[in-house]
Amino acid sequence: MLSTKNEKKLLLILCCLLSLFLTITIWELASLERQYKKFLEIAVIPTVEEPVDLIKIPVPTESPKPTKGLRVLGPYDYLNLSLFSRDSLAFIYQKKENFYLNLNEQIYGPYRKIDSLRTAGNNFTFRYYDNKEQAYLRINDVNFGPYQDVRLFHLTAEANFGFEYKENDFWYIRIDNKIYGPHEEVERVTFYQDDYIFSYKLDGKWYIDFIKWKEGPYDEISSFTTSGENFAYLYRLGNNWYVRINQQEYGPYEKVSLLRLSGGNFVFVWKENNQFYLKIYLAE
Image (cartoon, rainbow, N blue to C red):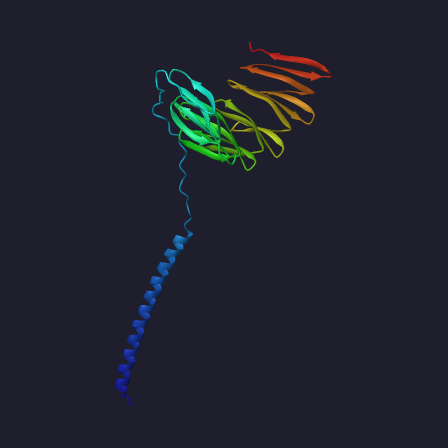
């Protein structure tokens, strides 16, 4: 049997050990809590995607020049001269089943098909196809595609560009690094007030997109044109045709067979009861 004095000593030792154990336990719990909070903070931070770099078309510092003097190039299975001047020579040629582009003696290819070569300043672009009938657009050293189809409508000496492309049976418009779409069809893209304007079809209806606003829906759009700060087009609603000249509308008509716009001047021809009429406006 322990004496009362020894029992007190043992009890004191047990209390000290229990106190130490509790202190260690509390410290570990606090440490776990801090780690858990840190984990939660990391977990709830929203993922922010890094901004995608805009595609910048590299501009050739100097356009290569063709070799001077008398030469003979060939033989080729097919040859189409695309560009010729004192400082520029470009032609598309075929060898066996492949097509190539010779642009001032720089060779591009092989391709299954190549066409639509255009130049602006030192910049160049062309459309080409692979063996799977996929279409691509090359602008200087940058390739776009593959697409079901592609049509270029703009290229400048500053390497600004615009083109239409078809993907998954829908048409899109790309102007530098901005993409508009999808559209069922795109009829026309042109300039208007230092920007672009285009007509497109979506869900069976036609619209005109002025970038800053849209007009429509219409059952059909025709003769869409611009001239300086002015625009004009024909549109159909049901069986009736209308003429839109800037903010002025004319109609309805049975049929409008001609529309011309020149600056602020316009003329159009419409049909009514099998008779034709001509409306003309000439600014004073």
